[in-house]
Image (cartoon, rainbow, N blue to C red; front, top):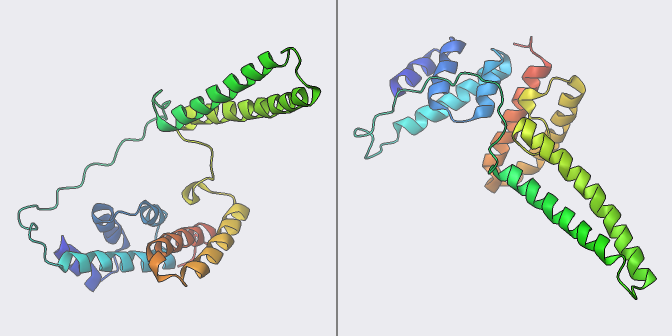
Length: 211
């Protein structure tokens, strides 16, 4: 496979062939999403850089290289409709444990409200806490429904799924600020690479016709 990389790098005109090589050898899902959007100036530059890095790694001698050939890539999984997460999924367990704890505490406070000789100040404190717990229970119920539908806790939409131009521009601006900070921290090189990949993907989505 290193020979294929070397051949492609010698004449990097066939974008589709380069994408196929990265699909077999690359590991970044963000870059794969970028390349799947088609050939642009950004994606060509990123593809050539990443394949060059893979070629450099392939040239490094490894004792087990001959005994452990690279296996053929597995066929891509067939897209299926989303299925509910198992009842022991970590995200679902987390939400349900928090929901049970909030409900249990609220029930205990309700029972204590009628305790004899309870001071008015203490009763007021309990009432406020019951109100807070009721809000928390409702929020956790929303989270539980989200996990059951999407298989994950609520959170920001991934860049690959964003389609609104205003949201893309807003995320690009935030990532540019983050990139400026990361460039001053050599120990965060891996994080910087992720941010740059995200920015390249956003630029491609904002300027699909740029070449």
